[in-house]
Image 1 (cartoon, helix red, strand yellow):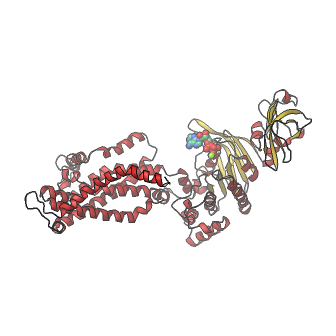
Image 2 (image 1 turned 60 degrees about the vertical axis):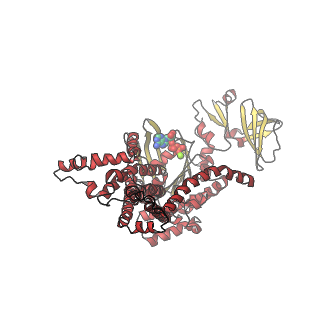
Image 3 (image 1 turned 90 degrees about the vertical axis):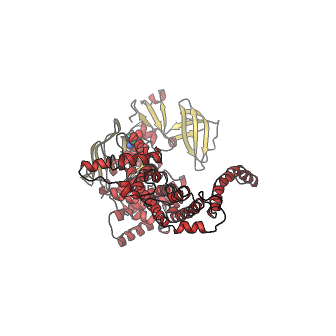
Length: 290
Length: 331
Ligand SMILES: Nc1ncnc2c1ncn2[C@@H]1O[C@H](COP(=O)(O)OP(=O)(O)O)[C@@H](O)[C@H]1O
Ligand SMILES: [Mg+2]
């Protein structure tokens, strides 16, 4: 890949896929930006036209916007917290030589293969339900009032559902990282007088930093667009207590039929996602180097 | 103080007995080398001493104390691993200081010890680098530095030089020997390379399939190998073995003669042969001679002037002839 000719050939060869990918991304983004400056309400046909920054103004000053912003951060932050810490603990457990290790590992991975709508329904009807749910049953068994999770703690409940789905992913990545740790390093540390805790904090945890970074970056991308779990369980409610940015865009365009406003919300969401991405790369991106 | 005594030490992994019961005495201040072919249980033996593996039977005493209940860190032994096992995310300084930190030594004292070790090992300029930014030899030195600062009763080395290139290996060999002379601490050193064993050891322990074949000083092993295995393993190029009638003449099942104890002549001698390959090293010449007793290696002077296809006569130095019985034991 060094001569002039081979380099131009290479460029020519990869150009179709690059162009395709570019169109794939650029066309929807361009259309979203275009719509975000239009008056485009499905309930008022024929009243189109350019409205400048109005859509943005109404979206950003909507009181639901701030709530949605906070909810999004709570959801993403909460799930990351649970999956990274839970993932490390599970990975440590699964790394032990236990009986039936293979089966246990498959079981741990299982939630990842359940589609979001299904897992949300299972949680909603079989676990959280205040009348028929298992949690309600357990509460009654020990003489407590059943707690209506989705009504009284909607964000926490959704965070738990999403975390349950993503825990296997985090565990899997962290487990592979843990297994790639040179056992001689641990033995050296043991001879150097490090107890189990010191070995974990000084040797294992730094070794896991890179894998944890990958987990955080990948999960953040997917968590920002969490939608099915909210739609299935709470519909963003009660009120807008569990409305995230993604869900707010949906409400705007498909429940209020305001496509222009929804597009503006979409652009805002893209910008915020990029800000989060930049922050993340600043904070933990250096773990990926070298 | 680094006296290590192994009494009937045995190790089995499941049903496989890797080390049959074995006794060994390692004296304070000695440089002991375990040598043997790959897979003969050298590392396992070292790890038993270190406490990284539990013995299946027998007892290891360190300075007269039974060590069965002692975890690795409490045995006062420091180990240098084949892969170096440096902590990749810590600087060289932190790597070397790690055992001191674990021992909760105060910072000033720790810094002094680290600086001291770095000076001994020529690492002062590299203290702030990460292991990944060092060459193989430097990493090796960091691993040794991490061992030195603990001021252990004995050092354990597991093939520490096998990841280095040939020139560096000779250098590090010398440095470790010098370190031993400076510190006068017991060192137990594992290698599969008999040259390392011969050049460094006060006492060599030759192992085969977990069994001790012979213990002795390098020259003892060279001059009076107890059996055919030791005779063939110690010395380079390897000893020549001849069996059959020629051996029977000397009243043995097989005889062995080292390449350097054979006289070469173009006119007369005991065994006639044809030179196959000749390796001219300048100082020495190694001749591979085809005889009716098989291939015989001969070490001649640098000026010998013999080449492939030449007819030569070989005469063994009878005072240096080794005789073995049918079981391979020296007679
Ligand atoms: N943890 C283990 N489990 C089972 N067998 C082992 C284990 N460690 C070593 N062995 C076996 O013990 C023998 C000796 O190994 P080792 O001490 O590493 O040899 P060396 O260091 O002399 O090359 C080998 O046959 C190896 O397969
Ligand atoms: Mg080994």
